[in-house]
Length: 124
Image (spheres, rainbow, N blue to C red):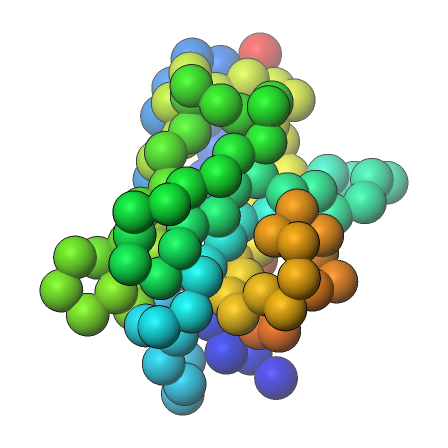
């Protein structure tokens, strides 16, 4: 059951920027942490970033720290964003939005709600 909807993926060259958006579909996640994961072909889904429900606490994977920024809308908190800068070919993956973790945010199995994903392709 799709509860989140991602948008903003695409094909870009290395060094470019993209901003992904994640909105609700049928259920509000305004008072839950939200996060982003990604999955490249043949690899496991990996943690990218997470943000607390107030938008003050953020967490990043080492591989994206300093290049990606996670945020959420200030007013109703129900939309999350992932600003990706200085993209690299190794960032190529399907990016998934998630919400409502029940445990460690780095663990994909703890998140209750997911989107269907948006493809990000970075060419060299």
